Length: 332
Image 1 (cartoon, rainbow, N blue to C red):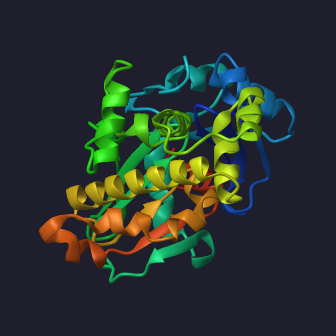
Image 2 (cartoon, rainbow, N blue to C red):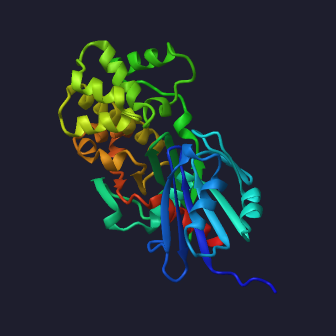
């Protein structure tokens, strides 16, 4: 006998640091998952291994899946940017016994969720004067730096992918020019992701420390030496205002993020607004509210006044990637 579809959708937000999975139903909706769990991505050989472990811990039978993945999606495959994984929708469907599997870039998933977000999901940095049908930009520093945008098709917003985070870093100040030279001396392409992401923060810290302008306190040096991931340690020290070096590191990060968010807003003419996603912005809201971000965002010469009118929001809902994968999976 043919198995009756369960109507349950497996959704995932697949990143270089962690993978979040959930099971949602059409009745309860994506904001009320029937099961949800998070896994450390580098601890598994593949997405299939994580999915099997997750589903084995539930009694739920899913028949479709939709995943937002941190990397470009070409056809039915995606290479995870900061993991040695190749995610293949056809293989996933066959090995997991699903009717369909949809893969979208993780920023496309996040962007897909944006029109469904409520006031409780957002913190506004600049209310601006948004065009209700204007293009929308999404930029998200997490492990890497993701970008995407939405356009209005006359009926609804549609999300589009971008790998703009890998575009050339363009320094604007003497310090940033020194930063570019610092990275160039270490080889490789200097993209915005290399200077504006979770992976970049420790390098910004080391750059400022090595200039000698801001001494490194011994207690922080000890904490960093024993930390498996130095980024949260630096962010915490900055938020606690316990270390000038950490504070200036975060301010440099915020200034670069503001400039690139403004670049993206210009490139897609984001009169509908700019949304900051990813794990870092919602954790550093006090620094985003200081004014450094918005000054860098709007400092675009003759088009500064245009950008001053663009609404800017921080997405504070940590499950936005799963929400977007669920909305993207409605047709899966």
